[in-house]
Amino acid sequence: MTDDRTHVEWREWGPAPFEEARAADRPVLLALTATWCDSCHEMDAETYAEPRIAANVNDGFVPVRVDVDRRPRVRERYNMGGFPSTVFCTPSGKVITGATYLGPDGMRQVLDSVRDVWADRGEDAGRTPRALAGNPTPAGAIDERIEAHLAGQLDEKWDPRFAGWGDGAKFPLPRTIEFALKRAREQATETLGVVSESLYDHDAGGFYRYAEGRDWTDPHREKVLDANAALIRAFANGYLYTGDETLLDPAYGTRDFLVDRLWNGTAFGGSVAPDDDSNGDGDDDGFGPRRDLTAFAGGNALTADAFLTLAGYTDDETSREYAERVLDALAADFVDDDGVVSHFDPAAGTDESADESDGAVPELLLEDQARAVAAFTRARQVLGPDALATEDGPLELARRIADVAIEELQESDGAFRDGPDVDIGLLDEPLRPLDGGVEMADALLDLAALLDQTAGSDDETGQGDRYADAAHDAVAAFAGAWDRIGVQVAGYGAVTARLVRPDLVIGVGDAAGADLHRAALRVADHEAVVVPDAPAVSAGTASVRQGAETREATTPEELMRAVSALTDGTQG
Image (cartoon, rainbow, N blue to C red; front, top):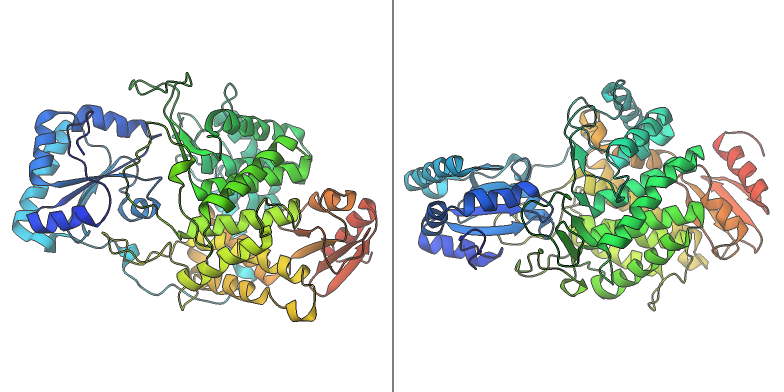
């Protein structure tokens, strides 16, 4: 397809352009872009639109344009450190060289250089990135040292002057904030405060992606669904621990932003570009900046999780309503009968700024599967067993999604691959992301606890063991390198803690929404598992369990005392 903006004859991602490159004896040029990325649009206007550069690309290369939100596995294998990424590959997909933004002069030099290297060395000029070498993961034992190490990393990387962690560009790191809420609460709440001040858009709502400056200045003003959902949940959990209602303001404001700007009628779209739209690509509906209304499974699952977390702590009906609508859309449009999650639903509403020419929809991606399991297990905890409009309940659906992920993506060493082997470029090379494995392990532990608590007969007991074992193996696959894991993946410490110490599980004999259930959701432990309509618990009673220790309560006050008795090691 010839792009009127760039004059480059872009191909769609798929096997065809690599086969074409092989037949024509040419390198492949991969342009990794995103709808929200201003620099990507600038490179289109300044570099690819230059006629001589476009002609050079068309004549000497096979150009392929990739939307990184639609193709996250391509993003992770070919990202040159930011977007746009300009990557030159052999017809087998191996990397010759790459860069991020290239102006016209830089592009001319790189095109000439790659042409010379290709003429001289051909396929031998390519390399496979080290992360895709297929080496065994650093397996080891799971013990208390891992949580302690990552709690120590909070202090070591803490920025006492400006808050947050690290001394460079500041990312909000919502999962690190959630880890810190139980281990370094002042750091967590101070970071939430500065994120609210510096990255939250007080006029339109929503969070910017990150700040260029150590002091949280120069924010990159794109707003991406995943990051906003994760921050809603982090702020809600901050409120859970502190009772500080000011933490709810950005959570509610971001909820409203997502509903107003990214709701496509069925689910939430993926992103909004910065407001200063200088490229003339604004929407026709008066919203101004470029929006990608493509509904991505992982981002929507994370949003449902976040909205249910907020609703569980506050009884917010708007959050509950949209969470239910998203869950129904995921169940109906994204998850097939085998539990395979499609990455996006092309029929879920896109606008003209979204590239719809990426070929087949990716499916069975680790992040999508993990977040879907987490969303449906959260639904079982907050909304109860009848949360969905579909025949299957949330727990049954979570189990099906988890089953296929374990069967198809978990390797013999326990680590999860990021998706299935696909013979296109480097997609057949194994990538085992630690953060994705952490998300899956955390969701599997929730699923295991819920299944154990909802077992209706002796034949059903122990159903959670498979999922707990899979979570353990996924975490253990990296435990040999525990002392090299940094604060950016502090969630690894949280999930190892759940494996070392038994979860706090609260079974409630009453339906979702009852006083005891609402009190259980508000226990100051965001890692607790809450089970309304628990079959083995009598009506009007809550059973609080941690390991072999159990307490019972019949009022919210008794419930809080029972939780304190278990978690503080005292007698209740």
